[in-house]
Length: 166
Image (cartoon, rainbow, N blue to C red; front, side, top):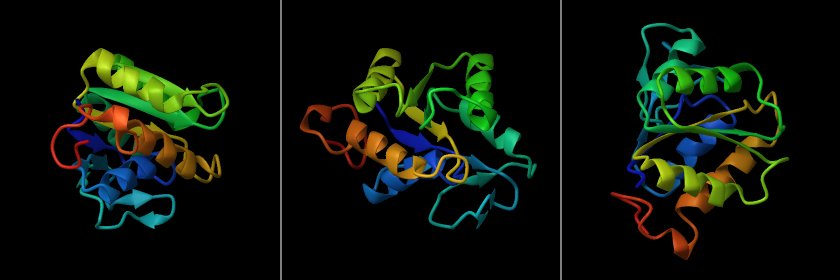
């Protein structure tokens, strides 16, 4: 049962997860780099994030994977590269379940995400994936997948805990 959505608030998939939570008044948070650094400038105050001691993106990436119960990595491309690949490596390192959902490879991405949450009893979900500059359109795709998985379908009642349930 999801109780919180976390991410590092980088443009693209990360921010989409947080934006879905904010839209529905659902608990969110996570780690971001010192200075609230993202590729489009400082991360806005609407995101309830804690800064890491370092401005290095990798520290934020690892801490979000470490401190969550599971991670979803959302991309448009079938192949995972760069920071998304590092996210998966950190999830493995900290023995956290993870799944990669690709627009090009998954015909029921929201159902796949629900399966990860149910199968592993995930309370805190780390939403990660491509930056908007790397894969234009990933924010929209990740927003739809996250929203459909947890907020917009009747069959999702009971998968969420806390504010915004069902």
